[in-house]
Length: 503
Image: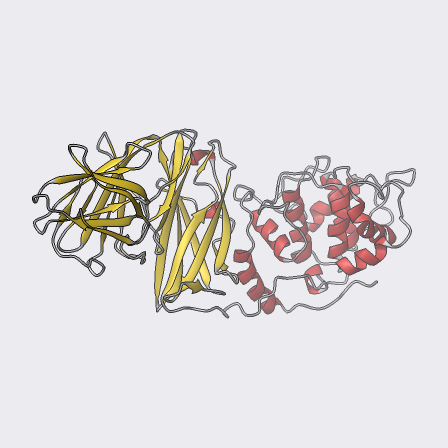
Protein backbone atom coordinates (compact mmCIF):
# COMPACT_ATOMS: atom_id res chain seq x y z
CA UNK A 1 0.00 0.00 0.00
CA UNK A 2 1.62 3.23 -1.17
CA UNK A 3 0.59 6.85 -1.05
CA UNK A 4 -0.40 8.14 -4.45
CA UNK A 5 1.68 10.97 -5.88
CA UNK A 6 -0.07 12.36 -8.94
CA UNK A 7 0.62 16.04 -9.64
CA UNK A 8 -2.48 18.17 -10.16
CA UNK A 9 -1.96 21.16 -12.41
CA UNK A 10 -2.97 24.33 -10.66
CA UNK A 11 -5.03 25.71 -13.54
CA UNK A 12 -7.04 22.49 -13.73
CA UNK A 13 -7.57 22.60 -10.00
CA UNK A 14 -8.92 26.12 -10.17
CA UNK A 15 -11.43 25.04 -12.81
CA UNK A 16 -12.57 22.08 -10.73
CA UNK A 17 -12.81 24.18 -7.58
CA UNK A 18 -14.90 26.86 -9.27
CA UNK A 19 -17.40 24.22 -10.37
CA UNK A 20 -17.59 22.04 -7.29
CA UNK A 21 -17.62 24.86 -4.75
CA UNK A 22 -21.11 25.74 -5.85
CA UNK A 23 -22.19 22.11 -6.08
CA UNK A 24 -21.31 21.05 -2.52
CA UNK A 25 -23.30 22.81 0.19
CA UNK A 26 -24.20 22.08 3.80
CA UNK A 27 -26.95 24.26 5.16
CA UNK A 28 -25.62 24.42 8.73
CA UNK A 29 -22.33 26.16 7.87
CA UNK A 30 -23.56 29.58 6.77
CA UNK A 31 -22.62 31.17 10.08
CA UNK A 32 -19.34 29.28 10.41
CA UNK A 33 -16.15 31.34 9.95
CA UNK A 34 -14.71 28.22 8.29
CA UNK A 35 -17.43 27.81 5.66
CA UNK A 36 -15.11 27.99 2.64
CA UNK A 37 -12.66 25.51 4.17
CA UNK A 38 -15.47 23.06 4.97
CA UNK A 39 -16.76 23.19 1.38
CA UNK A 40 -13.26 22.67 0.02
CA UNK A 41 -12.58 19.68 2.28
CA UNK A 42 -15.87 18.16 1.14
CA UNK A 43 -15.07 18.81 -2.52
CA UNK A 44 -11.71 17.09 -2.13
CA UNK A 45 -13.48 14.06 -0.66
CA UNK A 46 -11.73 14.41 2.70
CA UNK A 47 -14.67 15.35 4.90
CA UNK A 48 -18.22 14.01 4.72
CA UNK A 49 -21.34 15.47 6.26
CA UNK A 50 -23.35 13.73 8.93
CA UNK A 51 -26.43 13.27 6.72
CA UNK A 52 -29.38 15.41 5.62
CA UNK A 53 -26.98 17.98 4.13
CA UNK A 54 -25.59 18.77 7.59
CA UNK A 55 -21.92 19.09 8.47
CA UNK A 56 -22.07 19.85 12.23
CA UNK A 57 -19.11 22.31 12.20
CA UNK A 58 -19.15 22.74 15.98
CA UNK A 59 -19.04 19.02 16.76
CA UNK A 60 -15.80 17.71 18.23
CA UNK A 61 -13.33 15.68 16.20
CA UNK A 62 -12.50 12.28 17.72
CA UNK A 63 -9.44 10.11 17.23
CA UNK A 64 -11.20 7.66 14.92
CA UNK A 65 -12.15 10.41 12.45
CA UNK A 66 -8.66 11.90 12.77
CA UNK A 67 -7.14 8.61 11.59
CA UNK A 68 -9.16 8.64 8.38
CA UNK A 69 -8.42 12.27 7.52
CA UNK A 70 -4.73 11.77 8.29
CA UNK A 71 -4.51 8.79 5.96
CA UNK A 72 -6.24 10.68 3.15
CA UNK A 73 -3.70 13.49 3.47
CA UNK A 74 -1.02 10.91 2.75
CA UNK A 75 -2.93 9.64 -0.29
CA UNK A 76 -4.37 6.44 1.14
CA UNK A 77 -7.70 5.26 -0.28
CA UNK A 78 -10.73 3.34 0.95
CA UNK A 79 -9.27 0.23 -0.70
CA UNK A 80 -6.06 0.71 1.26
CA UNK A 81 -8.02 1.06 4.50
CA UNK A 82 -10.04 -2.07 3.76
CA UNK A 83 -6.87 -4.05 3.14
CA UNK A 84 -5.34 -2.73 6.36
CA UNK A 85 -8.45 -3.71 8.31
CA UNK A 86 -7.76 -7.37 7.49
CA UNK A 87 -4.41 -7.22 9.30
CA UNK A 88 -3.86 -7.72 13.02
CA UNK A 89 -5.18 -4.69 14.95
CA UNK A 90 -2.53 -2.32 16.23
CA UNK A 91 -4.69 -1.65 19.29
CA UNK A 92 -7.10 -3.79 21.32
CA UNK A 93 -9.93 -1.28 21.88
CA UNK A 94 -11.18 -0.93 18.28
CA UNK A 95 -12.89 -4.20 17.32
CA UNK A 96 -16.39 -4.59 18.73
CA UNK A 97 -16.92 -0.85 19.25
CA UNK A 98 -18.85 1.73 17.24
CA UNK A 99 -15.51 2.91 15.91
CA UNK A 100 -14.57 -0.37 14.26
CA UNK A 101 -15.23 1.28 10.87
CA UNK A 102 -11.92 3.14 11.37
CA UNK A 103 -9.83 0.03 12.06
CA UNK A 104 -8.04 0.10 8.70
CA UNK A 105 -7.33 3.82 8.88
CA UNK A 106 -6.00 3.49 12.43
CA UNK A 107 -3.74 0.58 11.44
CA UNK A 108 -2.35 2.62 8.55
CA UNK A 109 -1.59 5.68 10.64
CA UNK A 110 -0.09 3.66 13.47
CA UNK A 111 2.19 1.94 10.94
CA UNK A 112 3.20 5.34 9.52
CA UNK A 113 3.94 6.69 13.01
CA UNK A 114 1.46 9.53 12.56
CA UNK A 115 -0.87 8.44 15.37
CA UNK A 116 0.11 6.77 18.61
CA UNK A 117 -1.85 5.00 21.32
CA UNK A 118 -2.70 6.25 24.79
CA UNK A 119 -1.00 3.40 26.62
CA UNK A 120 -1.86 -0.21 27.55
CA UNK A 121 -2.10 -1.02 23.83
CA UNK A 122 -5.19 1.17 23.52
CA UNK A 123 -6.03 3.89 21.02
CA UNK A 124 -9.17 5.52 22.61
CA UNK A 125 -10.92 6.07 19.23
CA UNK A 126 -13.85 8.00 20.68
CA UNK A 127 -11.75 10.49 22.62
CA UNK A 128 -11.90 14.06 21.28
CA UNK A 129 -8.72 15.73 20.04
CA UNK A 130 -7.31 19.02 21.16
CA UNK A 131 -6.08 21.62 18.68
CA UNK A 132 -2.47 20.77 19.62
CA UNK A 133 -3.15 17.10 18.87
CA UNK A 134 -4.32 17.89 15.33
CA UNK A 135 -1.44 20.33 14.89
CA UNK A 136 0.97 17.52 15.84
CA UNK A 137 -0.60 15.20 13.27
CA UNK A 138 -0.31 17.83 10.53
CA UNK A 139 3.28 18.61 11.47
CA UNK A 140 4.16 14.92 11.09
CA UNK A 141 2.35 14.64 7.75
CA UNK A 142 4.14 17.79 6.56
CA UNK A 143 7.46 16.26 7.71
CA UNK A 144 8.35 19.14 10.04
CA UNK A 145 8.73 16.97 13.16
CA UNK A 146 12.25 16.70 14.56
CA UNK A 147 13.70 14.42 17.22
CA UNK A 148 14.38 17.17 19.74
CA UNK A 149 10.83 18.58 19.83
CA UNK A 150 9.09 18.70 23.21
CA UNK A 151 5.33 18.19 23.35
CA UNK A 152 3.16 20.23 23.42
CA UNK A 153 5.05 23.54 23.49
CA UNK A 154 7.38 22.92 20.54
CA UNK A 155 4.52 21.54 18.46
CA UNK A 156 2.31 24.53 19.19
CA UNK A 157 5.14 26.90 18.29
CA UNK A 158 5.89 25.00 15.09
CA UNK A 159 2.21 25.16 14.14
CA UNK A 160 2.32 28.93 14.54
CA UNK A 161 5.58 29.17 12.59
CA UNK A 162 4.06 27.21 9.72
CA UNK A 163 0.93 29.38 9.72
CA UNK A 164 -1.45 26.57 10.70
CA UNK A 165 -3.28 29.10 12.86
CA UNK A 166 -4.53 30.94 9.77
CA UNK A 167 -8.10 32.20 10.40
CA UNK A 168 -8.11 30.44 13.77
CA UNK A 169 -8.06 31.57 17.37
CA UNK A 170 -5.30 29.08 18.14
CA UNK A 171 -5.54 27.70 21.66
CA UNK A 172 -3.63 24.43 21.76
CA UNK A 173 -5.34 22.93 24.82
CA UNK A 174 -8.88 23.55 23.49
CA UNK A 175 -10.92 20.72 21.96
CA UNK A 176 -10.91 21.03 18.17
CA UNK A 177 -14.19 20.93 16.28
CA UNK A 178 -14.87 19.83 12.72
CA UNK A 179 -14.94 23.37 11.37
CA UNK A 180 -11.58 24.26 12.92
CA UNK A 181 -10.10 20.99 11.67
CA UNK A 182 -11.29 21.84 8.15
CA UNK A 183 -9.63 25.26 8.38
CA UNK A 184 -6.29 23.93 9.66
CA UNK A 185 -6.27 21.12 7.12
CA UNK A 186 -7.02 23.43 4.19
CA UNK A 187 -4.09 25.59 5.23
CA UNK A 188 -1.85 22.52 5.49
CA UNK A 189 -2.85 21.29 2.03
CA UNK A 190 -2.49 24.55 0.09
CA UNK A 191 -0.21 26.90 2.01
CA UNK A 192 2.47 24.95 3.85
CA UNK A 193 5.64 23.74 2.14
CA UNK A 194 7.26 20.51 3.20
CA UNK A 195 11.05 20.55 3.72
CA UNK A 196 11.46 19.37 0.12
CA UNK A 197 9.53 22.41 -1.15
CA UNK A 198 6.39 20.49 -2.13
CA UNK A 199 2.80 21.08 -1.05
CA UNK A 200 0.29 18.33 -0.25
CA UNK A 201 -2.05 19.51 -3.01
CA UNK A 202 0.71 18.83 -5.57
CA UNK A 203 1.43 15.34 -4.27
CA UNK A 204 -1.90 13.71 -3.48
CA UNK A 205 -4.57 12.78 -5.99
CA UNK A 206 -7.64 13.68 -3.95
CA UNK A 207 -11.05 12.41 -5.00
CA UNK A 208 -12.26 15.67 -6.53
CA UNK A 209 -15.86 15.70 -7.77
CA UNK A 210 -16.05 14.78 -11.44
CA UNK A 211 -16.11 17.95 -13.51
CA UNK A 212 -16.71 16.23 -16.84
CA UNK A 213 -19.88 17.03 -18.73
CA UNK A 214 -20.50 20.15 -16.66
CA UNK A 215 -22.27 21.76 -19.59
CA UNK A 216 -23.78 18.53 -20.92
CA UNK A 217 -27.37 19.35 -19.99
CA UNK A 218 -30.60 19.14 -21.95
CA UNK A 219 -32.87 22.10 -22.67
CA UNK A 220 -36.39 21.07 -23.62
CA UNK A 221 -39.00 22.80 -25.73
CA UNK A 222 -42.31 23.35 -23.93
CA UNK A 223 -40.81 22.52 -20.53
CA UNK A 224 -42.96 22.87 -17.42
CA UNK A 225 -42.02 22.96 -13.76
CA UNK A 226 -43.88 22.19 -10.53
CA UNK A 227 -42.84 22.32 -6.87
CA UNK A 228 -43.94 20.22 -3.91
CA UNK A 229 -43.04 20.43 -0.22
CA UNK A 230 -42.94 17.59 2.27
CA UNK A 231 -44.48 20.07 4.70
CA UNK A 232 -45.60 23.63 4.13
CA UNK A 233 -45.97 24.34 7.86
CA UNK A 234 -43.16 23.60 10.35
CA UNK A 235 -42.68 24.55 14.02
CA UNK A 236 -41.09 27.85 14.99
CA UNK A 237 -37.66 28.33 16.50
CA UNK A 238 -35.46 27.53 13.50
CA UNK A 239 -33.52 24.40 12.46
CA UNK A 240 -36.53 22.84 10.76
CA UNK A 241 -35.93 21.09 7.44
CA UNK A 242 -38.38 21.61 4.58
CA UNK A 243 -37.83 19.27 1.64
CA UNK A 244 -38.52 20.79 -1.78
CA UNK A 245 -39.03 18.60 -4.84
CA UNK A 246 -39.02 20.20 -8.28
CA UNK A 247 -40.51 18.16 -11.13
CA UNK A 248 -39.75 19.10 -14.73
CA UNK A 249 -41.83 17.81 -17.64
CA UNK A 250 -42.08 18.65 -21.31
CA UNK A 251 -44.40 18.26 -24.27
CA UNK A 252 -48.14 17.60 -24.47
CA UNK A 253 -47.79 14.26 -22.66
CA UNK A 254 -45.83 15.73 -19.72
CA UNK A 255 -42.85 13.42 -20.13
CA UNK A 256 -40.06 13.66 -17.52
CA UNK A 257 -37.44 16.27 -18.47
CA UNK A 258 -34.24 14.48 -17.48
CA UNK A 259 -30.72 15.92 -17.12
CA UNK A 260 -31.90 19.52 -17.19
CA UNK A 261 -30.90 22.23 -14.74
CA UNK A 262 -33.24 23.58 -12.06
CA UNK A 263 -32.28 26.70 -10.10
CA UNK A 264 -33.67 27.50 -6.64
CA UNK A 265 -34.19 30.72 -4.67
CA UNK A 266 -35.66 31.49 -1.23
CA UNK A 267 -37.01 34.53 0.62
CA UNK A 268 -38.58 34.95 4.06
CA UNK A 269 -40.66 38.09 4.08
CA UNK A 270 -38.36 40.71 2.54
CA UNK A 271 -35.15 38.87 3.47
CA UNK A 272 -33.12 36.86 0.98
CA UNK A 273 -32.57 33.31 2.25
CA UNK A 274 -30.77 31.63 -0.66
CA UNK A 275 -27.98 30.48 1.65
CA UNK A 276 -30.44 28.36 3.66
CA UNK A 277 -30.94 26.06 0.69
CA UNK A 278 -28.88 22.87 0.61
CA UNK A 279 -28.19 23.56 -3.08
CA UNK A 280 -28.91 26.46 -5.41
CA UNK A 281 -29.21 24.26 -8.48
CA UNK A 282 -29.28 20.65 -9.60
CA UNK A 283 -29.77 18.37 -12.60
CA UNK A 284 -32.99 16.40 -12.86
CA UNK A 285 -32.93 12.61 -12.49
CA UNK A 286 -34.68 10.00 -14.63
CA UNK A 287 -38.02 11.08 -13.14
CA UNK A 288 -37.38 14.70 -14.03
CA UNK A 289 -36.90 15.62 -10.36
CA UNK A 290 -34.46 17.52 -8.19
CA UNK A 291 -34.79 17.60 -4.39
CA UNK A 292 -33.22 20.22 -2.12
CA UNK A 293 -33.77 21.20 1.50
CA UNK A 294 -34.39 24.50 3.24
CA UNK A 295 -33.24 24.94 6.85
CA UNK A 296 -35.36 27.48 8.71
CA UNK A 297 -33.99 30.25 10.90
CA UNK A 298 -35.67 31.57 14.03
CA UNK A 299 -36.01 34.86 12.12
CA UNK A 300 -38.30 33.04 9.66
CA UNK A 301 -41.01 32.54 12.29
CA UNK A 302 -44.45 33.72 11.13
CA UNK A 303 -42.94 35.02 7.88
CA UNK A 304 -44.20 33.85 4.51
CA UNK A 305 -41.40 31.71 3.11
CA UNK A 306 -41.24 31.89 -0.67
CA UNK A 307 -39.43 29.13 -2.58
CA UNK A 308 -38.89 29.83 -6.26
CA UNK A 309 -37.45 27.58 -8.96
CA UNK A 310 -36.85 28.05 -12.65
CA UNK A 311 -36.05 26.01 -15.74
CA UNK A 312 -34.80 27.04 -19.17
CA UNK A 313 -37.05 26.27 -22.14
CA UNK A 314 -37.47 27.58 -25.68
CA UNK A 315 -34.79 30.21 -25.07
CA UNK A 316 -36.64 31.56 -22.00
CA UNK A 317 -36.90 30.78 -18.30
CA UNK A 318 -40.05 29.42 -16.69
CA UNK A 319 -40.54 30.30 -13.00
CA UNK A 320 -42.74 28.64 -10.41
CA UNK A 321 -43.34 29.50 -6.74
CA UNK A 322 -44.43 27.71 -3.62
CA UNK A 323 -44.95 28.98 -0.07
CA UNK A 324 -44.33 27.69 3.45
CA UNK A 325 -44.40 29.03 7.00
CA UNK A 326 -42.64 28.39 10.28
CA UNK A 327 -45.61 28.84 12.57
CA UNK A 328 -47.39 27.16 15.45
CA UNK A 329 -50.72 28.73 14.44
CA UNK A 330 -50.79 28.15 10.68
CA UNK A 331 -52.23 25.40 8.50
CA UNK A 332 -51.43 24.15 5.01
CA UNK A 333 -53.64 23.86 1.97
CA UNK A 334 -52.92 21.96 -1.22
CA UNK A 335 -54.81 20.94 -4.30
CA UNK A 336 -55.05 21.25 -8.06
CA UNK A 337 -57.11 23.38 -10.41
CA UNK A 338 -57.89 22.09 -13.90
CA UNK A 339 -60.48 22.75 -16.57
CA UNK A 340 -63.71 21.25 -15.13
CA UNK A 341 -65.06 20.63 -18.64
CA UNK A 342 -62.29 18.31 -19.82
CA UNK A 343 -59.42 18.19 -17.29
CA UNK A 344 -57.00 20.16 -19.44
CA UNK A 345 -54.24 22.22 -17.83
CA UNK A 346 -54.84 25.96 -17.86
CA UNK A 347 -52.36 28.81 -17.99
CA UNK A 348 -54.71 31.59 -16.89
CA UNK A 349 -55.64 30.60 -13.33
CA UNK A 350 -56.25 33.32 -10.77
CA UNK A 351 -56.61 31.86 -7.30
CA UNK A 352 -56.81 33.55 -3.93
CA UNK A 353 -58.32 33.48 -0.45
CA UNK A 354 -60.51 36.18 1.06
CA UNK A 355 -60.99 36.55 4.81
CA UNK A 356 -64.11 37.92 6.41
CA UNK A 357 -62.01 40.95 7.39
CA UNK A 358 -61.49 41.64 3.69
CA UNK A 359 -57.82 40.65 3.53
CA UNK A 360 -56.93 38.90 0.29
CA UNK A 361 -54.15 36.28 0.00
CA UNK A 362 -53.06 35.33 -3.52
CA UNK A 363 -52.18 31.65 -3.94
CA UNK A 364 -49.58 30.70 -6.58
CA UNK A 365 -50.53 27.89 -8.94
CA UNK A 366 -47.81 26.11 -10.90
CA UNK A 367 -47.77 25.25 -14.58
CA UNK A 368 -49.53 21.93 -13.91
CA UNK A 369 -52.32 23.49 -11.86
CA UNK A 370 -51.00 22.51 -8.41
CA UNK A 371 -50.86 24.74 -5.34
CA UNK A 372 -49.43 24.18 -1.87
CA UNK A 373 -49.31 26.99 0.68
CA UNK A 374 -49.24 27.73 4.39
CA UNK A 375 -51.79 30.24 5.69
CA UNK A 376 -52.83 31.57 9.11
CA UNK A 377 -55.84 29.87 10.62
CA UNK A 378 -59.23 31.44 9.98
CA UNK A 379 -62.41 31.47 7.93
CA UNK A 380 -61.77 31.90 4.21
CA UNK A 381 -63.54 32.17 0.90
CA UNK A 382 -61.63 30.23 -1.74
CA UNK A 383 -61.99 32.04 -5.06
CA UNK A 384 -60.65 31.09 -8.45
CA UNK A 385 -61.14 32.40 -11.95
CA UNK A 386 -60.23 30.64 -15.21
CA UNK A 387 -61.06 31.08 -18.87
CA UNK A 388 -62.60 28.03 -20.53
CA UNK A 389 -63.98 29.65 -23.68
CA UNK A 390 -62.70 26.92 -25.98
CA UNK A 391 -64.28 24.13 -23.88
CA UNK A 392 -67.87 25.33 -23.39
CA UNK A 393 -70.34 23.55 -25.69
CA UNK A 394 -73.26 25.86 -24.73
CA UNK A 395 -74.02 29.49 -25.44
CA UNK A 396 -75.16 32.13 -23.03
CA UNK A 397 -74.31 33.33 -19.56
CA UNK A 398 -74.77 31.19 -16.44
CA UNK A 399 -75.12 32.22 -12.79
CA UNK A 400 -75.26 30.43 -9.47
CA UNK A 401 -74.60 30.88 -5.76
CA UNK A 402 -71.00 29.66 -6.03
CA UNK A 403 -70.29 29.62 -9.74
CA UNK A 404 -70.67 31.89 -12.76
CA UNK A 405 -69.74 31.61 -16.44
CA UNK A 406 -69.68 34.66 -18.70
CA UNK A 407 -70.29 34.72 -22.42
CA UNK A 408 -66.54 35.27 -22.85
CA UNK A 409 -65.82 31.98 -21.11
CA UNK A 410 -64.67 33.43 -17.76
CA UNK A 411 -65.56 30.83 -15.13
CA UNK A 412 -65.52 31.86 -11.47
CA UNK A 413 -66.00 29.58 -8.49
CA UNK A 414 -66.11 30.26 -4.75
CA UNK A 415 -66.59 28.25 -1.60
CA UNK A 416 -66.13 28.85 2.12
CA UNK A 417 -63.92 26.84 4.48
CA UNK A 418 -62.73 27.15 8.07
CA UNK A 419 -58.97 26.55 8.44
CA UNK A 420 -57.85 25.28 11.86
CA UNK A 421 -54.39 25.67 13.43
CA UNK A 422 -51.91 22.96 12.60
CA UNK A 423 -54.08 21.05 10.15
CA UNK A 424 -53.28 20.13 6.57
CA UNK A 425 -56.06 20.38 4.00
CA UNK A 426 -56.14 18.59 0.67
CA UNK A 427 -58.70 20.82 -1.03
CA UNK A 428 -61.02 19.31 -3.61
CA UNK A 429 -60.37 21.99 -6.23
CA UNK A 430 -60.77 19.91 -9.36
CA UNK A 431 -64.41 20.38 -10.29
CA UNK A 432 -66.93 18.88 -12.69
CA UNK A 433 -69.70 20.54 -14.67
CA UNK A 434 -73.42 20.00 -14.00
CA UNK A 435 -75.84 21.26 -16.63
CA UNK A 436 -79.34 20.66 -17.94
CA UNK A 437 -82.49 22.34 -19.20
CA UNK A 438 -85.73 23.18 -17.43
CA UNK A 439 -89.26 24.38 -18.18
CA UNK A 440 -88.98 26.73 -15.23
CA UNK A 441 -89.01 30.39 -16.14
CA UNK A 442 -85.72 32.26 -16.61
CA UNK A 443 -84.10 33.45 -13.36
CA UNK A 444 -85.73 30.60 -11.43
CA UNK A 445 -83.47 28.84 -8.97
CA UNK A 446 -82.84 25.14 -8.61
CA UNK A 447 -81.19 23.68 -5.52
CA UNK A 448 -78.46 21.06 -5.81
CA UNK A 449 -77.72 19.21 -2.55
CA UNK A 450 -74.95 16.71 -1.95
CA UNK A 451 -76.35 13.39 -0.76
CA UNK A 452 -75.88 12.70 2.94
CA UNK A 453 -75.04 16.34 3.73
CA UNK A 454 -76.70 19.72 3.84
CA UNK A 455 -74.20 21.18 1.37
CA UNK A 456 -76.32 23.00 -1.18
CA UNK A 457 -75.51 25.21 -4.14
CA UNK A 458 -77.95 27.13 -6.32
CA UNK A 459 -78.06 27.31 -10.12
CA UNK A 460 -80.10 29.92 -11.99
CA UNK A 461 -82.05 29.15 -15.15
CA UNK A 462 -80.83 31.48 -17.91
CA UNK A 463 -82.72 33.06 -20.80
CA UNK A 464 -82.30 29.91 -22.88
CA UNK A 465 -83.78 27.84 -20.02
CA UNK A 466 -80.46 26.11 -19.28
CA UNK A 467 -78.48 25.96 -16.05
CA UNK A 468 -74.76 25.27 -15.70
CA UNK A 469 -72.50 25.32 -12.66
CA UNK A 470 -69.04 24.16 -11.68
CA UNK A 471 -69.39 21.74 -8.77
CA UNK A 472 -67.29 19.42 -6.62
CA UNK A 473 -67.38 15.69 -7.43
CA UNK A 474 -70.05 13.75 -5.54
CA UNK A 475 -73.63 12.46 -5.70
CA UNK A 476 -76.42 15.04 -5.67
CA UNK A 477 -80.16 15.54 -5.82
CA UNK A 478 -81.70 18.43 -7.76
CA UNK A 479 -84.83 20.13 -6.50
CA UNK A 480 -86.85 23.32 -6.35
CA UNK A 481 -87.05 25.94 -3.63
CA UNK A 482 -90.26 24.30 -2.40
CA UNK A 483 -88.52 20.92 -1.96
CA UNK A 484 -89.76 19.13 -5.06
CA UNK A 485 -87.12 16.63 -6.23
CA UNK A 486 -86.50 17.02 -9.95
CA UNK A 487 -83.58 14.58 -10.29
CA UNK A 488 -82.00 12.16 -7.80
CA UNK A 489 -78.64 10.39 -7.50
CA UNK A 490 -76.82 12.56 -10.02
CA UNK A 491 -73.11 11.67 -10.01
CA UNK A 492 -70.60 14.41 -10.76
CA UNK A 493 -67.09 13.42 -11.81
CA UNK A 494 -64.18 15.80 -11.83
CA UNK A 495 -63.14 17.24 -15.20
CA UNK A 496 -66.29 15.99 -16.92
CA UNK A 497 -69.62 17.41 -18.06
CA UNK A 498 -72.74 15.79 -16.59
CA UNK A 499 -75.77 16.84 -18.65
CA UNK A 500 -78.96 15.67 -16.96
CA UNK A 501 -81.15 16.75 -19.87
CA UNK A 502 -84.57 18.20 -19.18
CA UNK A 503 -85.83 18.38 -15.59
